[in-house]
Length: 249
Image 1: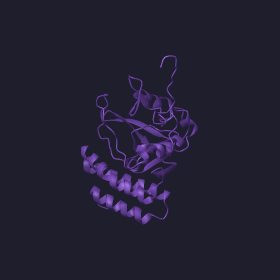
Image 2: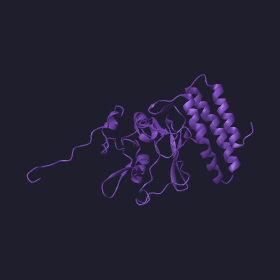
Image 3: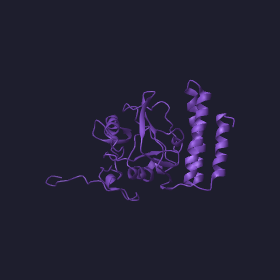
Image 4: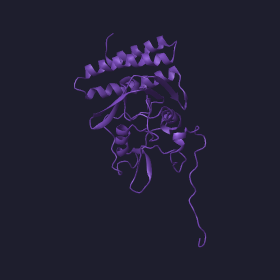
């Protein structure tokens, strides 16, 4: 209307989301009220798409030691928000964050906190984004915050991946709440076929399956420390996994 000045209302933090750590509170909000992670790319039209990462910020995070979620400097501890299967091969597709930022992502991110959520791919091809080779698309139903001091980057099939260091702490979440041992085991059990299938592309699949089995032994040992009293259940899961991998024990 003539003579009436209108301004677009600033988005408000979405109701129902957990309280934000100070670093998360410094991030801009989407129109839906979600904090926009630092890694999210800005498209040519100025919009932000949560599904698309900024490759410039990926390089900056690694080179300058920036938190993947909030963009501020990391300290001595690094936290990875991953699925339980990544605890087996100790590989993450994303660099680390602050522990508080990783915890927030585990309980607030719709994909990480809602097992029924699936990745939306509509329009990604038009934006020039392609699915990385070897990417496991399943929703793991459990989010793991893995805290460590060290990690190392590497390139695999033209894709940057990150080898996670020895854990200082492990925290498992399901639907935004602490996960049970049964929920963690179910996530590992249902995710194992995808990891086994990935070994078929290796030069020596049998050797890769054997190494995967050894990695699973170590991972279940770490998981068991978080859930005392479940040794028999962990051993049962390990037996099932060994059989699936074709490994004789």
